[in-house]
Length: 90
Length: 91
Image (cartoon, rainbow over all chains, first blue to last red; front, side, top):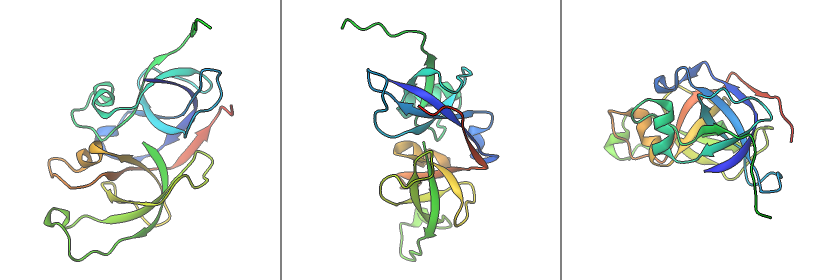
């Protein structure tokens, strides 16, 4: 799992039948200091995450399918939490 | 999943028979701003994407899920055609 910020979303009327109803959010992974880390990607969302929110993102198909709720759906990333705070020791 | 632009198609008459009737498209991954991100790659298509269209694709094992129950030897699959991208947060 990684921490990312929601940049926005993608509208796609024509999509795989198992993605019907899934929100597709553009997320940018973050470093510990909040700066961008690596490349942005798309994750499905069922929690209602909004732009600018920090989220917990899973980048693995097996777990993303659980979030999608469709057996063997063609997805590889999902938002699984909306973060309030991150407490670091230093 | 990532965004990409369809930049071509692959004609490959001699192929694994499981790929019969499946289109192979060349796609260029893009960042959210539409800039090229990494090298182009070849993907199977499950949604009828056309040349020049902005698409959503998935890579890895999950790509082969797109055509189930038909099992394809693919590692990248187009799973959506993008109408538009809405960016509301600029970090």
